[in-house]
Image (cartoon, rainbow over all chains, first blue to last red; front, side, top):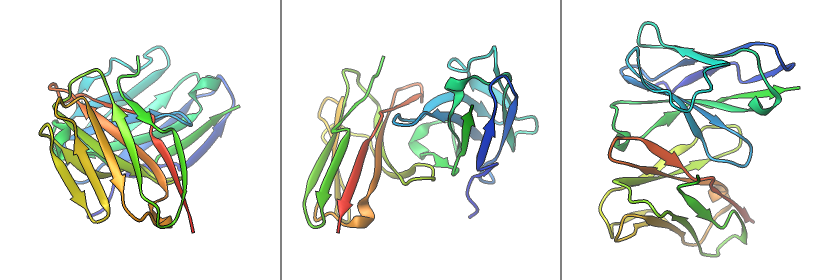
Length: 115
Length: 110
């Protein structure tokens, strides 16, 4: 079974620039999550999709972050404009069902450095 | 507000030693998961515990969920260098929403 694919693996941008991350979940996984993991901390949920609908985006900084999953499969997360504090690893995860008891499968993440 | 406190934050031991790491909260969770994360990779699910007092074993790893479903522990017997990594716990509430702790970074020296 192919895992969760993310790209790019690394990105360095200047503050105020924009950046986009891409995620392709495991085939058949209806639920997709974007997490932000700052160095030394655990992952923090940014947004959760069920198919192409948003289930939870309460912790997404909507003034600068946006995400979409138009066809209910792959997803993009965008930051515009980026700030220094956005430097982190952005993890995409998917699961078979909405209940986390199924467990997440995470991608390898995109490491973003904002300078 | 940090709902899950993991301790210790860092742990460095010699190969062959035993260790226990903890995940504590004042909140009740419907279930709790443990993950291990290696540098440059995403977390990988190790186990899910659901019932208060439940104990699960995975080879040299023993996981326990507290009776009140507010805390959990992970015990590793005879640690090996391959056990090195960041151990994360995630508490799941009834709505299916999860919260991760900040993890314990384990280093096992050969």
